[in-house]
Image (cartoon, rainbow, N blue to C red; front, side):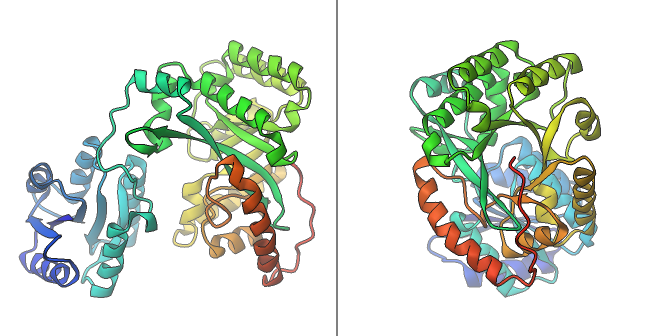
Length: 410
C-alpha cells in the first residue's frame, strides 16, 4: 500500500512517519511525504497512494482546498485527517468530504496516538470493515453501459428491511438498485443513478423495480416496498400511465409498494406534481419524502404533496451521538411529523446506540445495517427468521418497557 503523509510541520511529520513505520509492512507498504497541498497533488499523480494522512492548516494550499481538488479528481482511496483544529471545523470538513464522496476513515487529533493510528490503518487495509468503495479506480460509466445493463439483467434490485422501533416487527422494505458490472463487480448507486436520470432512463429503472416486486410478492408476505423515484419521474405522464396499467393488471399492487421521493429534487411544475400525486392517490398509492431536511424546499414540498411518511436523513441520524445540532434537527423533524400525522422512518441505524436513542425519541420505524444490509430477495426469509429471535432479545433487554404500541402500516 502506498501511503502519502501531508504535513507542513517538520517535527510532526517526522513523528507521524516514525509511528507509521512501526505499523506497516516495510516489504509491501511505502511512505511518501508532502509539505503542502500543491506538493501533495503532484505526489498523488506520481505515487497513486491508497491512503492519505492529511493535515488541514498548511501554507500555499491548505488541506481543505487539497481535499476539494481530490474530489474533483474522483480520488477513491482512504483518507485520515490529522489536525489540532477545533471540533466544529473538523466536523464541517468531515461533512464536506461526505458530500464530495471522499472516503474519510476518521480524524487523528494532534498530538497523534499510536493506538488510534493503528486502528485507522486496520480499516484502510480491510475495506470491508469500513465504507470504502471496492472500486480501485474511477469508473467511466458510458451511456451504452447503462442501456446494455437493462438488456442483460445487470441491474438487480436488493431490499433493505424496515422495522418497528417499538415492537421489532418487520413492517416494510426499501428497494435499492445494484449494478452488477461484469468487469467492476458491484457498482455503487452514486456512480450511476444521476447518469441514468441524465439519459432519461430513470422511469425505466423504476418500472424494472416495480415489476421485480410484483414477481416476488410471496417473499414480502404483503409488506410494502418503497420505490425511489425522482421529481422528473413523478411528473412523467407516461410513467404514471404505465404504473396505473400495471395496477389494472394487479389490483392489489397499491398494497405492495409505495413511492419515495427524494426531498432534494425540485419540481419544475407543482401542477404536474399534484396531477401525478392525485392520479396515484386515487388508486391507493402512497408517497413518502426521502432525506427530509437536506434540500431547500422541505416544508414547501410537505405543503404541496400528500405525503404519508417522512424519512429522516441518514446524515442527521448518524451524527446524533456527536452533534447536538443533528439531535435537535431530528427532534424537530419528529415533532413536525407527529403534528402532521406522518409516519417517521430513520435510515442509517447502524448500532444499538442509535436504535435505543431513536426509540426513546419516539421515531416509529428504522432501517440500517444494525437491522440488515440490503439483501437479494431470496435472502429475505433467512434474515426474517434470524431477526425475529434477535429483535425479541433486544426488546427483552431494553430498559424501555413501552414496547406494545401498534405501528401504523407505511
